[in-house]
Image (cartoon, rainbow, N blue to C red; front, side, top):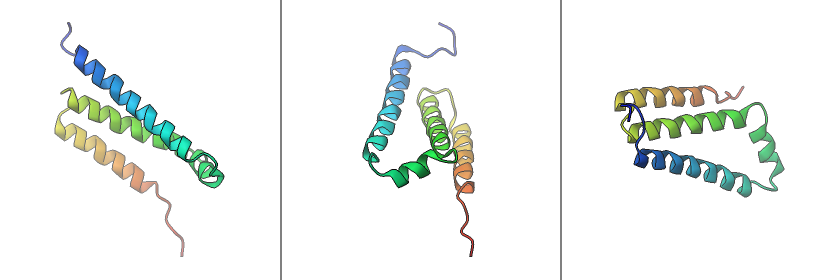
Length: 95
């Protein structure tokens, strides 16, 4: 097996995390069913795409750390970049 390939247990972990990610999104949309105003905000202006991308990045970094493919320093740098992106995208209230 190549040195960078995932083992069987690591592959199960990746599949489980992807399944949990999909389950969380399903629960979110089921809980927001019938709340049109919230769904409009969620689905407008690329908000949904941003949330999916951020969630995928966090899940990917977590998975890669758990399987030993990323060091803690690299993971913290990626996650701090994601936090900066999320917090920088919050609209400022105009006075």
